[in-house]
Image 1 (cartoon, one colour):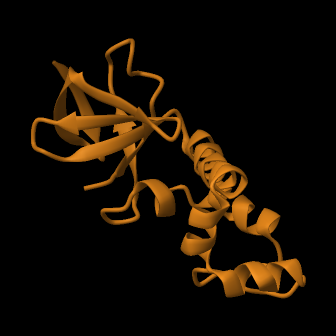
Image 2: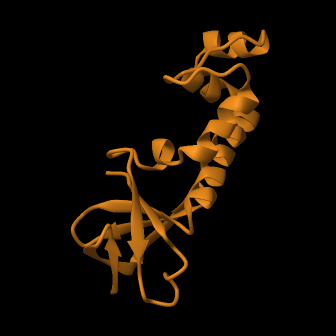
Image 3: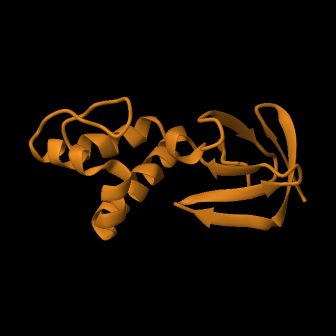
Length: 133
């Protein structure tokens, strides 16, 4: 049993409820919440960017479905577009957006980055958490 604090609220999870996803650690708490943990925002941003780059490189059909053909065409033409509210002029610029907003990828529950604290030596390097359910 691991005791930690997410935004100063006590959470408990077991070591058998830990998984890896998209480069981050996924834990299931005893309360039923699931959180992705990262060492910091920068690590989470890099992992989110890598997730989308990997999809673009290795599953272009799914990537096209997720981002949209019109957006990809606009980027190919160097014009501004985006699947979200932020408009950019290239795929590279869009991928870089994830570096600053990893919560948009990992915190599907509420898009909030939370502070994570744990004194357990194996968990003390993690500083941020993203709720995903």
